[in-house]
Length: 112
Length: 116
Image 1: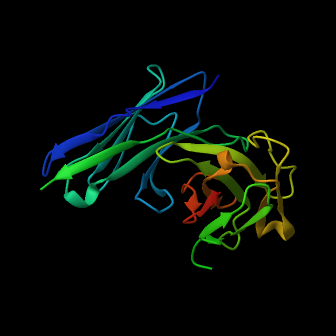
Image 2: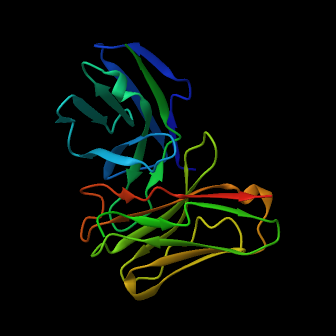
């Protein structure tokens, strides 16, 4: 069955360091991979999308890589800040109107 | 509206009662999703509407769950004879036409359902 795995353990890092979150998937051939941020009591907020033919995408302090051979995406936040503390979800989608499936998310804590 | 609106924001109901959850997507968004999120868990897909196509209901956990989307806009998720395991946050999301996920999905803040 289709499966998305994200680190279930929280990631604790010091302010200013780079946070790296991992998303692995099996039995799926996504056309797009998305990353979302979710704060407590709120719905997820879209951050970045990367296509299957793209290796890397950047947006301000965020960088996403996508390796379709390894079936893995890495999400980096450089120069992290306490305000970056949240849960980060990855999501996979195929073309043709198929449902998007989400990982369980990784909780990030950035200490001042 | 400016975003995806869901109502009510919180709902407490007695076991066995029916509930209706409402989602008002962004105007012009043809794709609409319902997801369920239990405490500390990821998003569980429930149902997907795309334009006038037949909805993808493959995620509905039982026949107590149903959803409709009227006029390609507002959607209602109905849970009949609620059970305690239905307690969760129900999230609605919509996306723009064409390649639905180019700009990601816009989520509402969810309805927190508690069945007592």
